[in-house]
Length: 268
Image (cartoon, rainbow, N blue to C red; front, side, top):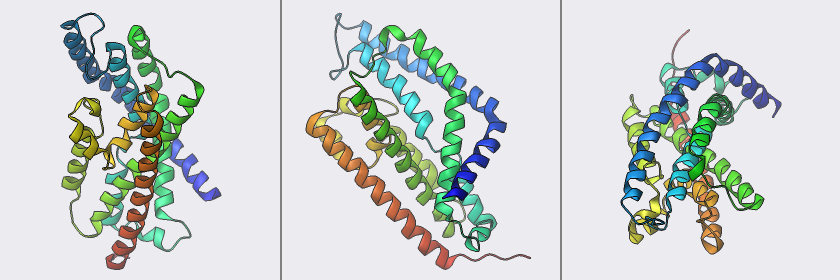
């Protein structure tokens, strides 16, 4: 276990080299967020005072997008899938096959190190943005909700990593995985709740999406934070999220075993 802590430490040191890049990316990432909030402010301004959209008051809608930004910074897979695919294509993965180290655990350690550094770099601009929108920012009702939100966010990060990891392993079979990664990103962006809260969609669509892994990558943790997932819905949501984490983990292991069986590398 100690070797993975060392990988995490080295990953943090290497990622810190790009801390200014992360800060700039976080700052410019707030531009589309600002446009989205202006759009919703215009929509609500056309309604009666206290009006709502699918049960969301203006403060809840603003808070939704602000929390989405925070959860995304904590859980999003950025370049990990590209690096995994490159390791396979370039033959760099061979070194991990002759060493007592598990490649998935190695990549997971690097994923956590990257998310930690990015979150720290993005913290200041995000907190400033939240402060500027504090009039419409709501907090969870109690510490228990905070704990459930953090637990769900952790599982959301694992789910995103395992799915992206599996997608990157397609490099064992195909030369270029970029098409598959972009398709996955499109599904995650729409069905995960990045663009809008999923529960403003028609009920049959929402029910169907709940059986897919995508809402549990982002929408579900944010719903817990806002207090919109409670009771039986909360229990079922956690069960589905945990199930998808387990399924994606097992799938990643299976694809890895199948991929290694056909992997070949040459060189001196």
